[in-house]
Length: 459
Ligand code: GUN
Ligand code: ZN
Figure 1 (cartoon, helix red, strand yellow):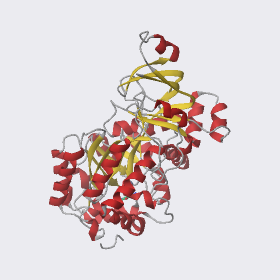
Figure 2 (tube, rainbow, N blue to C red):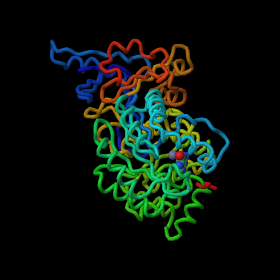
Figure 3 (cartoon, rainbow, N blue to C red):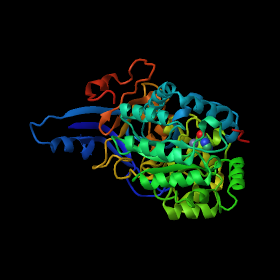
């Protein structure tokens, strides 16, 4: 058994975003056995309650803050090498930037390199769970699941499906998609920390026949998730409306195939309508809000208040590579800034709201609310240790914070991957080692490490 000692901040309550309360425990101890938190309390109390003579190890994380592992509800594995392309709207960015790169993953060797870089990006940013858009190529999806299993991160991912409107090399057929998906799901679904996700790219590039095949996979793979894009940019919404003339709206293009339910996470939903919000709420589906991506592509300002008022669950997605990086700290800050820019239409967000969005909301969206998302007894020890370098603005800020909530606000504003001292999934420290290695950032923790591996045109 291991005791993790530190200042623990999390948001275990069931409040909706806008009203979230922070649980803050200075000098807390989390007793972890078999990957799970089995006791939690003041350090002295937890240690005092242990049977005498038993062996336990103490991991001292008192400098800085211990937070639940971050949950990324929308991120694309094949796009890590195209991060940072600025100046394009969605459809142009896809055509000129994302899709040519995604075509390169036909080579499994290439895909393996990308998968290693992608998983490193997740872990180094403190992301312990992610709903990942895979590749259009089954071999590349295999390579991704292998890399995720090697690193020891929680993922849901799958084969990306399209049968029109993209470069020919990225297209499939309904039958082929079904067969390859079932094959991948048999190999990976519910093995270790992995689950299968049904992922048509967006209804713009998926015919009704392909969406029907997606529905069959969802039915035949028990416990699979469904994820796709919706209502991201005005041009995309108009193109989808022109293709699906009998659909009520964009969400309906998925819903009429039975793809919208409690297992569903739809990314973006910027240009949404009241009937769509009502439907998403009735179905218990979640929306992955990707604020950096929405800003970088100029897609629009996310109507969070309307989602919350309709009872639609919202989580956060980095949307790498249209987004601006892997960090959900940055994404949470961008979510806050976006609501500020919306003025009276925006939803004012507090630091606890933002932590909830980056942790517990994501866990719930991915159907993992009973396992991860906070650091209560009975949850897995998925955690990130924010430990700034001495003298850095974050260090200064934490030392001068007036309260735990104030400290959290500063952490959400200022934390970068360089400020993370360690990341754990299921009690195992995952190594933050770059595929092209530099010095290990977690020297003093290494002693405690039990596991070190821990088309045509679009427009
Ligand atoms: N819509 C369809 N594909 C994509 C993608 O790769 N990124 C984003 N942001 N939107 C999409
Ligand atoms: Zn996306």
